[in-house]
Length: 194
Image (cartoon, rainbow, N blue to C red; front, side):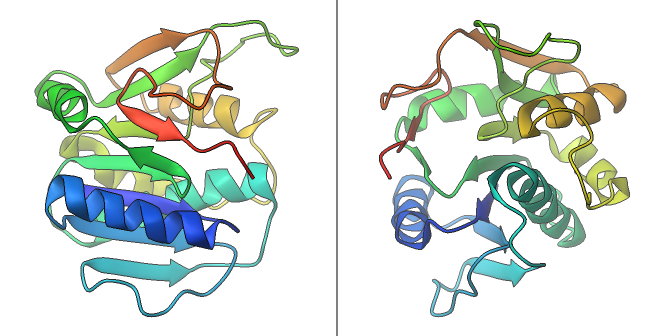
């Protein structure tokens, strides 16, 4: 499999995350895109790219997500992709692999926020922090530009608009809260403690 990460300012968390990924998934191909620090001395299975200047956590998170997936697409490895932010750790290997077995049916497996929110849900509010992509559609991400501003309201809605416009077959898991430091619906743990 391929594992994609974006990095902003959570260097210590990123390093711990890479160690966890290598432990759970036996050192997969890892691609890390950053609009923050330049990182060196990473494990041999990690490809790192600093693609631009700090854009802040909303726009930077969206563009770094897209950049890491582009890196995977350009690698021609033709494998399914797990994506997570630098502070989202995989902790439930069996649950994640169970979802990965569904990539024959679905292009994108993700979590969709349906709880209360200030903005109307004109597009799916897809949690950009962790998701799974089928190898069939990775090349489509090469066509997406790097944005100077958010396409729509926030990173989650912007990502939702992008993948909706791609006309993907999506399996979304509804969630109503995302602020607890517990295992989430896809088997990851979000370290909200800064």
